[in-house]
Each structure stands twice: as C-alpha cells, then as structure tokens.
Image (tube, rainbow, N blue to C red; front, side, top):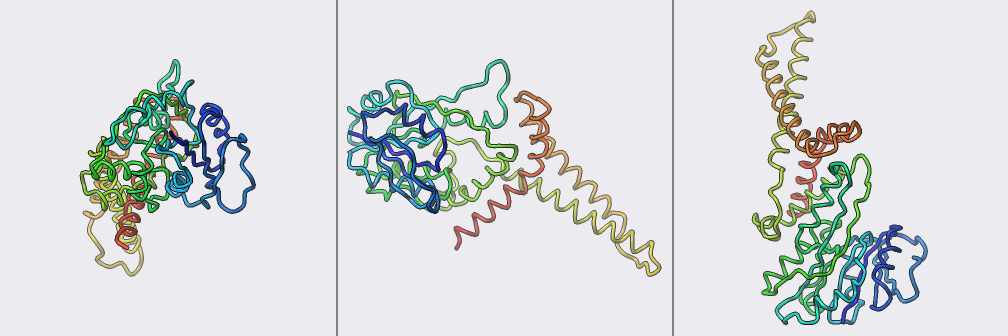
Length: 326
C-alpha cells in the first residue's frame, strides 16, 4: 500500500531510523551524497537509489519515482518512528477518501529535563506544531506525479515541503493529520547553527514569488523578523559610515591642510544610529536568551550570533530575490 522514502546524506542516525521502520514495508533510501562516497550500509530489504547530491527535494523526487505503491511516506534520516509505526501508517491511510492527498504524522520533539530548552532546542521543537513537514509525511503517488513532485529550486531541507503542500491544496486536494507518532531528536549543530539557518531567507524569497505575500499564513507560520533585521542592519551600517566620516574629518582638521569638513552633527548622528543598532540588537538577543537556560555558554552564543544574524539574514534575502528575478 505504501513505500517509505528516506533521503540521506549519510547520517549515522539512519540506521536507527531504518530499525524503527522495520522490514514489513518497502523502503527506499535515497543516497544524496556527492561524488563516489562508497556504499551505504543498509539492511538487505532496503533499496538504495542515488540522487547525486542535488538536495533533499531532488532526492525525494528520485525516491517516489522509484516507488510503485499508491502511497509514498517520506521520513527524514534522523527521526525515530514510534513502535508499531508501519501499522499506524496503514490505519491512517486505508480509509482516506479520494480527495485527501496527504497525511502527516504527529511529530514529537523531546524536551530537556530539569532545565529550560536552548535556542536550538526551541527551534527544533517548532516541528511539533509545523504543518506538512516531511519529517513524516505521506502523499498519494498519483498526486505527486500530477504536481511534478518537489520543486528542486529549493536546494535545502527548508520550504520545499511547504511549497508542495500549498500546490497540492490549491489544486483542490485536502491534507490531514494522522495518529502515527514520530520522534525528531534535537541535534547539536554547533555554535554557528543559527547563523547558518539564515540561508533559508533566500528560500523565503522564492516562496513569496511562487505563492504571494500570504504564503507564511497559509502554512500556519508565525510572522518573520526580517523587517527588524533590516532596520538593525541599516542602523549599524549608518553608524559605521557616519563614524568613519566623522573620524576622517577630525583627522583632517588636526592636519596642516585642515579644511571645513563636516560639522559635529555627523558624530551625533553616528551615535544616534549606533544607539538604535545597540537597542535592536539587545532586544533580539534578550528575546532569545530569556526563555533559555541562561548558562554562560548559551548567553555567549546568543550574544554573538544576535549581532551576526540581522546582516546575514538580509544578505541571504537579497541573494534570494536576485535569484528568483533571474
């Protein structure tokens, strides 16, 4: 009735994911590693196809096109389906009416015990309330065929699932939530993870181009912070430019060939812009620090990355706009 498709870049967690799925259903693992990294070590019943390192959208497309069952269930390679998951999938799908094109599993993200979650843990916990995420998402194969599958212009594991869900819904199909449960553990992606996540702003530009300004509300997403990031970045750049101008003018005045230069108002304007930047940056950092454990390491990470995120987010959004215009 259904085939499980799991794209992977070779994470060690794949083995645990496959063990939780079991051997009673067909499973296709899509190896999305680049080059010739060698064979994946998977159980004998698992079929492996290659997608050439073109990203999760292309990998999932390769997977469902290799399947021959009416339904395809997509899983990530770092999730752990609950005991009895395959039977629960069957129960979720068997009686669905024809107008239902997809069924999402219930994503559970473990919370830390005896402490508040970190910023990264809160980020991952957002999956538990997200709509139509491919951490555990089933689609009718005929609908995937009609929609052309996932849009491979989304190069990362970000927004490609939301884009497909919007296209399926606008084609007149319904998407529902099932009763099966899948756990998505929190990964430690390192000190700079939140800065790297800003690459998704380029994909948001593509979402806006494809689905209009209301796309975020259509998938149940919270309003973004890009406008505040833009204001923070503008204030910081203004303060820096005016500060350099003011310093250069003072240096010329101290020299033998001092000219009229610019007035002291430039320095005051630089201080004012710097104060705006500092206030916005402090507000952003505290918004991230306050709900967390507030350990020295977490506070340091939030302080440093809160300085970098606004300009990085704006740069990626501009890159995304340029890309979609081309």
